[in-house]
Length: 461
Image (cartoon, rainbow, N blue to C red; front, side):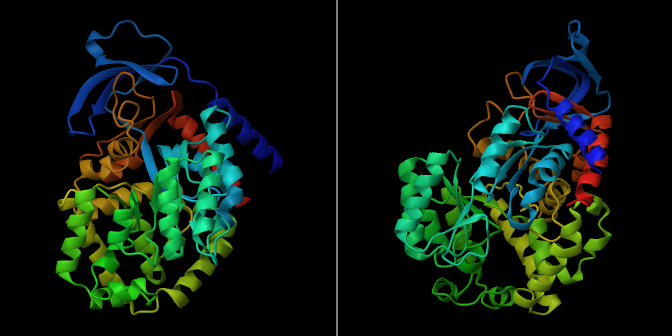
């Protein structure tokens, strides 16, 4: 096993070499802003950026590596906007399993929403310097949670002073944003919001249990994760929930009020609060006792301890604490979630694709993002709109349209080459012919070699 690990490491290091000149010819470029397809295009990449795009018939003599993409579709690299690379029981797999597994599935960027601080900062730097194989990282470090947080990758916050100190420490360490978790006390939440604003850090994450959605919007929270806060705002019992009352899918459905929901949707649209609903994770959470996750064909890429220990324990825990209501009630709530997303989308609330990988049962880094895009389509998005949640929208979210979200001169060379058109079937995002990450080209052969190596790594985790 040691020899296999060394061979796999050597392959990873060879791929992390600095980008060379690359020319992709005869590609069909998908404009993810409009859905237009530019046929038979040549894309010239030098170092980490695209330098020229034009008709292949008019292309001058090619130099460097030439890739014939005839009949294939070129899109911007995908982003998973809710990950946990170095999180609690899966942290040991972060470097040599989770990061490369994301990349080989076309994910060239991630927003990490809660990881061990030193590990995630080190990974961000190493990937940027091409010393480690993985997507580019935008990171929060550990989450800010309540005084009795169940998570290792969290900072316990009991008082406003605790919250301010945590924000200041994370700012000094160089994180990109602050992640809020569910159990942050009410007064500490508002202190964190004020301090984050004072030091110039966005704050994103859960709407804490002790805070209403309207209060989170007023405080400037930039994203809502998992649709938390909206279900509460759509209930006649919202005040009781904020005061500490128990929540459950059945309670949300029994106290659902269409007028309150409509008001919440209008508020989020007016303030353009980004939504990362993690729909695949949500479905798996509420229906975990009815899903045959052990039959997942991608299970070979899951850490052995995840499959044998972590996920069965999580499944049992969910059954005890969350999925106590009858299955038909929970199934109706999952449908209700999709309807809520449909209404938010119709109101032009903006969305990001995220998975929560690898925190949930059978939520695998890489494959789960493609399944998330399929859940958006199930919620009424067109394939183009679903694709935007993982390409154009992250570029807009980070105010970096000059770098990401399109295949155009000057953009960073984060690209995915597909064997079939994802605008016809969003499942075609999995039909990957090649990945370009920061100008480095990974052929299908490279990806297959990496996947074989990752199976062996997973078996040792």
